[in-house]
Amino acid sequence: MALATGLLAVIGAASAVYGVLELIETRASRAVVGSGAAIILLAYAALLFAVARGVFRGRRWSRAPAIATQLIQLPIAWSFRGGETTWFALLLGAVSLTVIVCLLLPSSTRAFVGDQP
Image 1 (tube, helix red, strand yellow):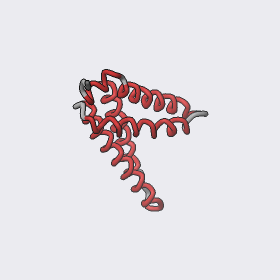
Image 2: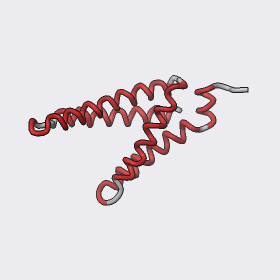
Image 3: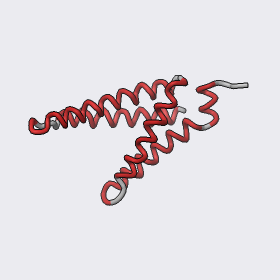
């Protein structure tokens, strides 16, 4: 679970950095699009940080949103394949799959739900 927590936090940090950069680079000609994208990225970062904290503490509620966000990122990673962005597709896909596997391991299940009879 520690690996999943760390990767969720890294994705959240990357999203926050990109959101801030998007906000800084927003021009008057595309203010609505730029600020909207920045708000979405910053909200996503906040969600990932909250989920990472929940996973770290073994909170049951955090597992589903953690897996859901990673399942959403898989098609996003797929869309980056080909050309100069293939490395990013592989990186994002590998990180997403790693988080999913870490959260579905039996040891993680025990940490989230405890020993069930």
